[in-house]
Amino acid sequence: MEKKMILEYRHFEAIGDMAKEDVELVEAAERACGKAVATYSNFHVGAAARLESGKIITGSNVESEVYPAGLCAERTLLYHHQASTPEDRIVALAIASDPSHRECYPCGQCRQVLYDVEKRQGHPFRIIMSGAGTATVVERASDLLPFTFEL
Image: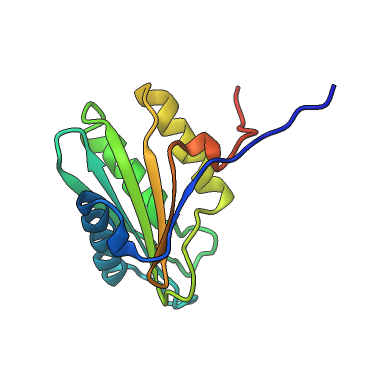
């Protein structure tokens, strides 16, 4: 049996073309890049999530001398959220990087964890991948990882 997948996403040629609250979220992710510990890669990544309450939380990547003990910005944010306020669901998450030569997309591990969080909170959230003044937006994590791992 042959099946077909269609990926729906929105692309913005300028971040300023997005809704004001999405621009604010991207700007928070860009500021979070400044908190990254990227001693080895010099690739600073920031993530910011808007919660249902309206609160914005952030995370940044952290590298370690003991590779692979480092952690991506998205997972830093998501694990902190789970440990502190999981009842306040995530409604949108933005990712940014410095340097920003192109849009910053989540790695495979982060895509799975994004999906896990959606599943756990029982509600999808938008993911905004920004960089170089542009952004691509998907409506749910499963759009980024259509064949997810499940126990």
